Image 1 (cartoon, helix red, strand yellow):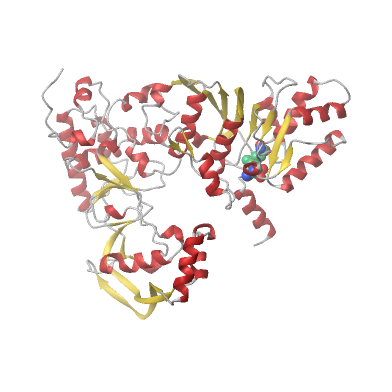
Image 2 (tube, protein in one colour):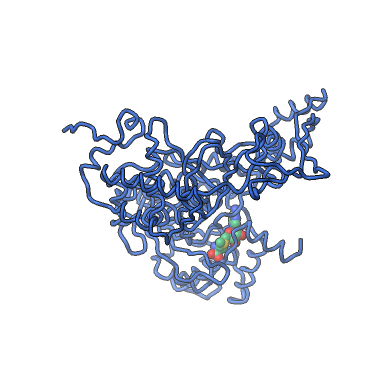
Length: 565
Ligand SMILES: C[S@@+](CC[C@H](N)C(=O)[O-])C[C@H]1O[C@@H](n2cnc3c(N)ncnc32)[C@H](O)[C@@H]1O
């Protein structure tokens, strides 16, 4: 790897997007520091925030500049930075600016997660922790035990999340935290636990940053948190007050719920009717997937099973982080010594590719993500002889992350599927018989739910409003995960009569698409869905809409149960 490329890789791994000094200055300008304040910058990079803080603290002291700087680093400023190169840049800037580098008893060039100052609590914690950076492989599992759960919620094993939890623990009651943050923080499910932690312990305000730096175009915001040790009633998001009660209506504790959208969350959610799942990562698509051309495929390989000797070296290379517990290691050594083997598969190129007609008993349609809506014929098949024996054998022998088979219980079931990475929901009907790919999550009706619900929900998922709710309230990143789908509102406001109309409309769309008609979001039949699903305040419908699948299964879906008071 070239030096420049290597440096770029390190930068990415460390989440090194440095804050411009002008922005850092603006962000500390109004904070109420005193000479008593203890301030922590947990990942200070080239020191943009530290330099801005020095400017704020200098006027609070008397004496020469040297004396004042020394006092500030002795009494007020605490900082950690893992990368010695940027740490050095900070020292050089100090030298240039003040002609002097004071003693810095509280600045450390080390990993924040190896820094243990158990007796310290801070009045202010300020900075721009690494987003999506990599945690030290050696520490990861231990850190997960310490920071991986808060208030009954899983905290994602990722730098920003663990920085925030550790800083939350280090903040005094009455203290303030100000962080720069990706705007994805507002909605994504993986940050749900952090949003809950903050709302339960203090007040929260976020504000968009109009321009961060040339280095990244990603929308950023400032996260302001004041630790009060009391739950808050509302959060302030870009100047809007959002009651916590509305946030709590959304499954992901979204901070982007607005008063006009909150009514959609007054009833059931799609997860009460369907379970969604991601699909499988094959690992080597070129070995097992074949493109369909005119109803045929070309098979260039044959699949041969063999007994592969088990060796310690091989097992370590496949293990997560190259780590194996002493007990497992001992077992493997034993197996290696006694010459044990594991069944493996060789994928051997054929001299002459075979041309095969579909359908074929050894192949199943494969559900790859696409931006087609309503219905699409399969574009690929997967070699699935003996129920996927070759694919499963290959995965089992591959790296640790290939060992699981995402979505396996749902293979071959009919449902709804959509493209994982997309600006809106591109949903379509998934017929029976497909093997599922991770690029196209799917949803399936829960047991006991009327089959026609699938068409009703498919119709809803094709509306502008449904995508709007998804992309503003549920998750405004590019990914549309299975859990995001489950958290969407179920259209409880639609009358039974309207519902029947929608279902036959969607069934007709599917049959037209099966006969070759292509729909997109400009097709009038698709736009019509938006008016069919228009929100009507319909308290009765809401009152009688069962909320849980278990209740639903006991009811005839299309008949309203007898009225009870
Ligand atoms: C987004 S940059 C921001 C730097 C600085 N706070 C600023 O605002 O300019 C994140 C910084 O975190 C540092 N970093 C990454 N992982 C770290 C860790 N485990 N401990 C301490 N610093 C870390 C990176 O080297 C990088 O300088």
